[in-house]
Length: 533
Image (cartoon, rainbow, N blue to C red; front, side, top):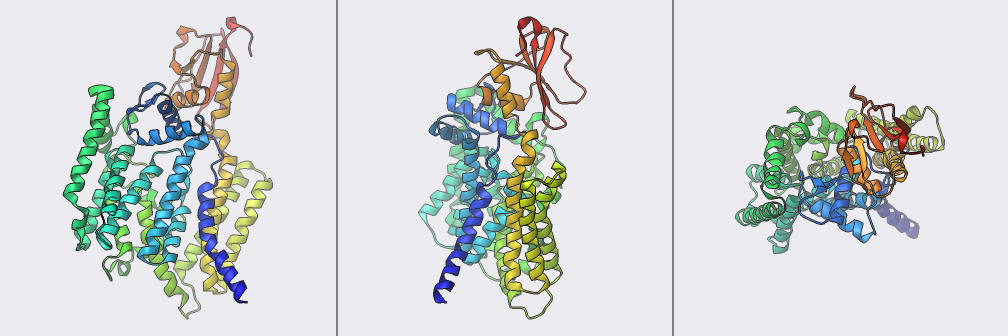
């Protein structure tokens, strides 16, 4: 009996890391999806071919972001023998996995081992983390560096004065600066300022703010000097003003994503699905009372709250910008949920409470959402849909049964199983459902194979996506042309916005493919150029 119990405990201890590994690694077997992935992958490919400080896209300067992310992906391209989708995605996956590991270590040391694992599992199964961790994107790497900086600052404020932790704190901020500019540094600075001002920790001087600011100013000057040396005044102005000041105050055109002030009031709850009820519970005034100092949950809450206010003040807003906040939010929620769970288990009343039932129903719907959506999308129930639907039904039924029968010790794990199942099933089904409309790679490769060797791709309706997709998959530059120039081969992109290109009758359509309702690619050839392939 003792041996069986010991074996069950060992198997149980393996489940959380296996669940995290599952959520991180599933869904990587797909192509580059528009809109962001082709751009980031192609810039990295060009960085691998021609290393420098200023990134390029289709051979032209693209200085929206500093070079460190592109250096990282480019280095991986070189190590793995060339540019590939999997290598590009591996950087985001590795950054997400490292962030989850930090959260486990942080929560375990600050409160309890179960709190650390709970925080990490809740973060790994939330919608925004789930999407971004598998996306070829800068933000997961930024999230890793800001989480490292926040953790190192907590260690200094709450535990001990350590030169290595101070070095990690400064180094993480410098890396964040070289990954995405000043935003990572400013977010951490705003969060720490709010925490120190409100909770007044006695050891805040351990951060050595004067030394920190001096080091960061030196890093900014070094980055600015490197950009100026390679690109001159125009490149420095574009990086320093257009992509910092203008994007913050008055984004326009390609320089930013203008959104209303309260944009995150509805996008943050969506990003945190399916964990809305723990958030609502943690916001109760009783949960904000400072019982002890330092309190890691309050640290995460105050840090993320100040960072959210700063992001809301900016004119440029996107859901992916929430990534640096999410680990701190889920550190807070993981600790508070662990405290609630301990109290909830020992309650003697038979009712589980309205909050529990709302969360249980939300998790059941979350588990069923992807298989049901796949059934509706495909208008048929194939083997994939039926298998995933069976898993979802089993998990949601178990949760509802344990809740109805008042089995508290089993209802909690069943709730987490529903969240993990819903996330894993979404990752499995997403490539099946969306590759056809999001992955232009196979069609673009066929265009490259049809064209004569050595010539660029002449195209009309060129946008950022085409400038990235065509070079990445074919190795050919994209040249924007007009019908009057009469190239032998021409690629036309029609976005179905009333501005379709009308070619002369001399051109013959050789192949065509639509990607969703708003993008069609066509390959045309002059009839006088030879037989249609």
